[in-house]
Length: 264
Ligand code: KIV
Image (tube, rainbow, N blue to C red; front, top):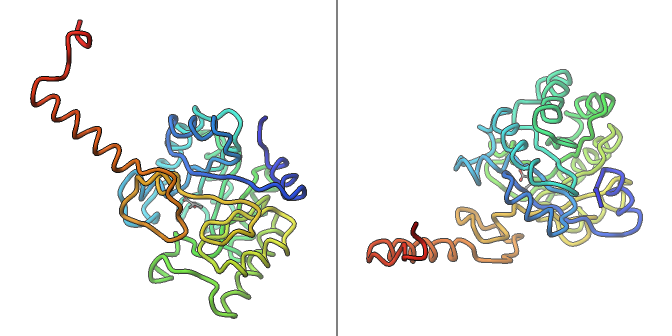
């Protein structure tokens, strides 16, 4: 069944949890889609996971369009959401609309995600009024890593928590169809999830959000640079891949690969 923004709203109303994971290429998108994941996010985490940058800040529109096009070819049923990279929407609502439009027209996105609350409410409204569904993102918003002084939990003080709640309402009022909350205390995420009509999707935000998202390479044990405590390991592919590559190298060195059956 094709998942749309309306499906997610219905899932919240029916108390059904939403599953979301990231993908940056066709194969991974196809595996996740086949597994029944509801939302596939082409995250700007591609900058760290694929390109090896230290943060998502350097990621460009061209890179996001390329990754979106690759993922799109693997998706049949999941809702395909694509991240707007740093500085593609912050300057003005016009910039946001032009770039969100490119992610839909050139990248094949069905919705876009952008980071921030009140300060980007006009951007969200402009995109939504033009027919582009927008997912919000609050808490530890990685594009602001330089302001936060690292990938630190947000919303721990009552002042920070109040601001995140106000921002969540602003995102909903601006017309967003969903909200990602990253690395915030579980109680705050629960309160916001109960307060909002739109579905919330948590990452490091406890069990009471309407859905969960992880970076796929994190939960598969592939991305070894970064191991936040909110990631549950569902596989250890880094070890499997190194083991397989090592075995191949050994076979090549000793002339055990290819065999007669693997030759023409
Ligand atoms: O870029 C990304 O992958 C994200 C998720 C971690 C929510 O924004």
